[in-house]
Image 1 (cartoon, rainbow, N blue to C red):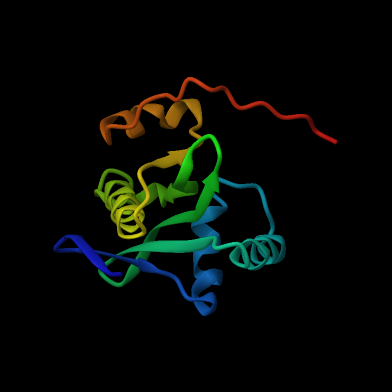
Image 2 (cartoon, one colour):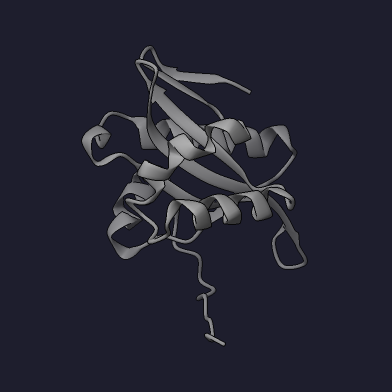
Length: 143
């Protein structure tokens, strides 16, 4: 599924051969070295995780990681694990285009929702995209 959300943005799934191109952008969000990033993406891809890229003028400017999920509590939904737009390209609509792609992809799969975890500083962006805070808090225990 390729969607053009503006004349200059092309949003599409990245092939495994393009994953390395995503690393410089993902590292603006995640603290991983390239080898570990590629290992994790490869491992997660076996469960449906995909990287999606936003290209502007042929240059990769934004990356989103997403995966289909089905749980008892939420049913079938799409989970956005990672969304980052290159610092130089923020404000260009790339983040909006990536989220629109995720929503269209979820609808095409007959899913009823998109879920994500947001850093506090990213919440205003997601609110502008009509996302609301979910009442169930996330918790974890490091083992």
